[in-house]
Structures are given as structure tokens and as C-alpha cells.
Length: 234
Image (spheres, helix red, strand yellow):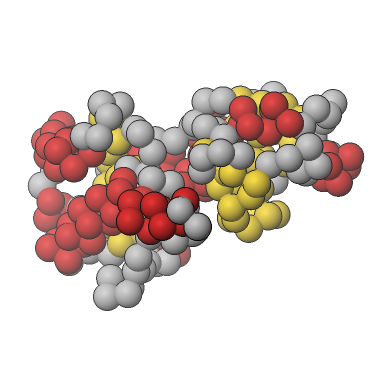
């Protein structure tokens, strides 16, 4: 079973929308214009629906990037996705940004050893990253977490197997970790179309979110400007 699934990705500087239809068509739009997610996303949704020849009432589910990532971006995506789910009375599918990146990496990279661990990295400022680790089968081997990178990061794992670090935080690892089993790709591999493989799996398995309680996975508490100032003044 494969339905008409609308996917929204707003967790990064790239705002993207994609739709997968029951007849296997994939239509999408992306924009990297800074701080424009809230202005563009609804228009992008209208345009991909029109291009696909669909109405909002034709959708079977909406999938959204659940985080971690930009606090503001995640709130925008969550608000739009839940609004669509409520209005069209369709299920909501939430997918980790890190899983989205994994899907993109697997699609684009074919020359990887079977034992390679894939480690998506999202820049969280200074030497901190949001990360997780997956084997090539997509099994999560390290749960999503916020990690401060230093020279000893991943040392035990790298001694045992190759690890491919990729995403906006990969350069931090590259600057600190020098190991023959480490490889690096600074491309983020984050886009609404990379949500689709997982969205389809969860749609078939009916793994949906409870609209009354679901919130994005921020990973760590957002710090307002006032709180940030107080912390700096301590």
C-alpha cells in the first residue's frame, strides 16, 4: 500500500516539500533563501499539489521532519504539518532529521563497505553536534544525542570499523579526529524527498503520531535571548 504522502522538511536552512503519489510519481520543491520558511512553505505545498494534480483532500498522510535541527524551522514545519493533518483528517508521520540524512546518504553513496557505520551530523554551534549512527541496513546503533566533539570522539568505534561522517557538523569531526577508518562528507543530505522512504514504511505499518500530544524532537531545550544573556553574565 502506497498512498499520496506529502513530506515537509524545515529543520535546516533548506525549506523543502515533496509529494509521493500512488502511481510512483515524485514531485518536489526546495528553497535555500534564509529565514523564509514561514513565507514559502504554504506556497510550495500548493504548487507541488497542483503539479501532481492533487487536492489536499486527496492526501493520505503528511510526513514532517521531527528534529533535531533549527528550533524555529522545526516549529514552522510542525505547525503546518499538524494543521494539514487536522484539516484533511489524515495521519501525521514524524521522522527524525538524522534518519532523513541517512536515507539521503544511502541513496547517493554506493561505494561503502558493508561494515561501515553512517553517522549524520547536524551543527549545533561551537564544537557540539546532533548525531546518531546507523548501519547500512538502517538499524540505529547509536541513539540521537547532542555530542561535544574532541580528539577522542568515536575512537573505540573507529578502531573497529569504518565510519562515514556527513552533514553540516562533519567538518568539526574532521578537524579533531584523524583516523584511517574515518571518512567525511560535508553535504547535508537533507531534503523532503529523503523523508519518503521512511514515510512510506511507516504509512504501510500505520505508525502515526498522536496529533494531540506530538511535538518536535528538539533534543535540547531552546534558549531564549533573555536566558542566553543571563547565562553569559554568570
